[in-house]
Image (cartoon, helix red, strand yellow):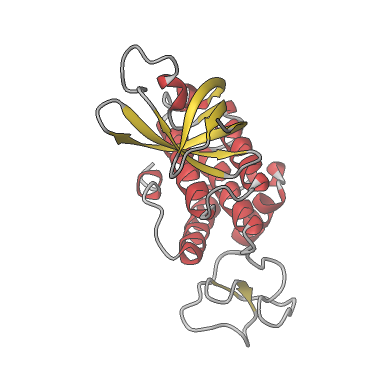
Length: 242
């Protein structure tokens, strides 16, 4: 029997049969793993509650022909319990899980940086030191950077000119007047500065930003993310209502 052990964050679950679930876990070393958790929907299950979304777990798998099987699971950090009590933080966390799932397309392909970003983002939400949408936007920007889609925020995305006038998603970030395509938005200078602060982890600047610039930043970041993913993040519909 081929066994392997890893730590990971549960991204989502699906019912299978009468008592089982398929769990999708982003792990530290193995990458994204889809595995069967047998009997976890029974009230007598030993580790059913440990395999819920948001949970940071230490898990052991048995390699199967099509899907691996979870044989052991121990909770490391139950982020779900802390986030569920606060709707803005819960919905932001849900958007993080969905984004992590969509950015790590291939299964069992190491994605350490995505794993670390997700754990850090969930920890920041649970600790409550920053506004939830700021944490979410920082997670989006850094995840895009890891995936190779970081937006240009200081010089023109097309010609590298320092004098920028607009933000164009199709161009890859800020653009100068000469390179500006039709339909490009013209965000406030403070909004672009906020995006840069979130990408760099400059929380002192981010926390001091004004509400209107945070709103504009969130709109641009969400649009940029979804354009690169080529489909929407369903969880964002709930985040945007807050």
